[in-house]
Length: 337
Image 1 (cartoon, rainbow, N blue to C red):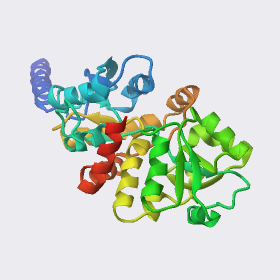
Image 2: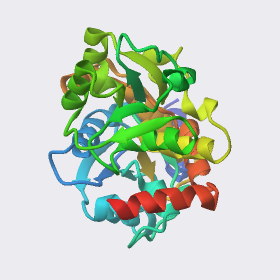
Image 3: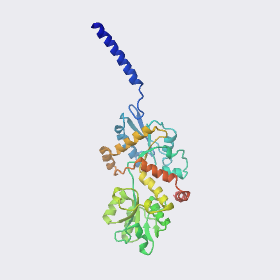
Image 4: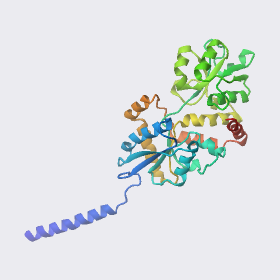
């Protein structure tokens, strides 16, 4: 019996040793981030919107990934976000440990052949954006113009107030003008507050701006929202110019939508394994749905407006494949800035 016990003990040790060796030989899943550190490159200097979003993601992402990795944020500012995009594309590791929050205009900049660009956005998988915007076109409460189809009902040009050529709010007005709507644009109103006051004084008929920033004045003054570009849930019944316009003008509306819906987009390095990309996409989505994350985002004065990767990929594809006639319009706007 003693002999048998000894043999069993020795045999057990052998089995245990074999098991340990076998387990050690098993490959660790590429999607398991145990013991790894994920670095989020931020396209701007500390303190701005991109920086706040990048660091907020860094604080919460790890617990939503297998292995609960450490996540750190590193600022890589320069050239309007080109430095960070070039780094992610050319230098960052492709094992899922390199993420970046990049400029929402990076795809349009690439399409326009921006200076210093050494990246191909289509090869950097997008993970999603925690926030998105909608740009709205407004008329004053007593205006007969209640919808985009009413713009011709005044018997004269519909007069818009805006700050200046090149502003996002001006671009949507110019789009209507180019599409043949009777629109006149008056620049020189410094901010949205000045523009709203101009509407109330009767100097102009309307203005445009991002919905979250204009929501309070819209509700207070009962402004009409006659059209939009974007997906805010409050605006589900408002016609989107991406749907109402046709031809090149539809393409222009889609390009204008890209930075709005792209908000604060997160990307991962090119050639990252597909299963790792999928794990990161799930992790980002779950992070954005995390109540603690949402609470911190709300303290920043923002609301969750999640744009998932497939929606952003479609927008980026539309921008990269935009007709040259459309791109020329944006090249002219770029030169005017």
